[in-house]
Each structure stands twice: as C-alpha cells, then as structure tokens.
Length: 121
Image (cartoon, rainbow, N blue to C red; front, side, top):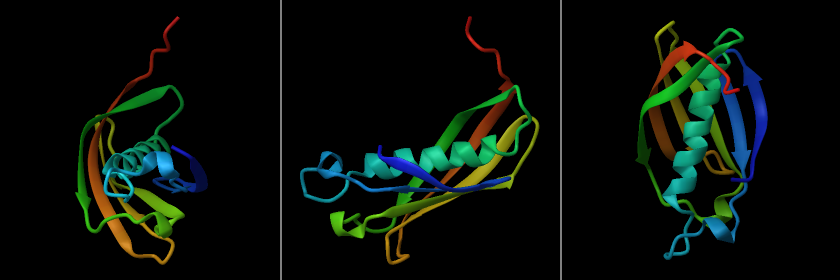
C-alpha cells in the first residue's frame, strides 16, 4: 500500500501514502479500498500503541465515510488514527484521511477486540 509511518505516540499514529497508478479505479480516481486499508491500519496501530507487550487485538468493525473523491494529484495522503476510549476488552478508535492541502477525504471509526496474543508455533 506504499505507507510510511510519520509519527507514533501512545494512542495516536500518523501514516502517509503515495498512491500509484495501481490504486486507480476505472474512473481515474484513487480506489476507496486504498483509503479503507490505510484508515484500518492507523486505527489498529493507534489501538496497538496503548496495549502492553503480549496483548493482541483484532477489528470488530470498521465504518468508513468518504467525503470527496481522492484525486491522484492529492498525494501524499495523510492518515491519522486516535484512540477515543481504551479498554481491556474493547478499544474504540477514530481516523481521518487528508490530502496534501489538508482537505478531509474520508473518516473512519472502529471497535477493536483486545485479547492475549498467542503466537503460532
């Protein structure tokens, strides 16, 4: 997905992505799937930043709202994810995707299930 970490602090992360032609939809704009994937990533990473070592998480749900079409000229795209409420069972997070001028492109919310991480052997 061509993402880079820009900033990380407890409960908040920022990623940037530079879409390529591979991310275009048939209309010549950036496919909403890229926006959803980047938003899902920052939601999960923001939640992960609040958890102790050995604790895992998985998405329960994600809701994405697309505010405007994402034009190829909008790059780089910046996604910011924040924990709204942390917990030992469920974490609630929100995220936004903006273009290089700071215009809002999409928003997302997610609930994430917290569990003891058990690596596969």
